[in-house]
Amino acid sequence: MKPPGVEPWVCPTCGDQLKFEILDDEKFLVAWSCVNCGLIRTTEPA
Ligand SMILES: [Zn+2]
Image (cartoon, rainbow, N blue to C red; front, side):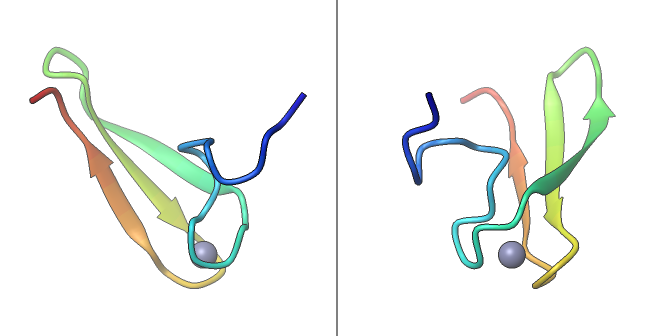
């Protein structure tokens, strides 16, 4: 059950799996990076 394009851990550019790294545990800040095309996204609470 994996609808395409909705998973935050999949690169929106190349579709590769993203690698995530926790930047700040308390603020829930996470960086997602794609090893294939170099895309980096960060998620943080609004
Ligand atoms: Zn990518």
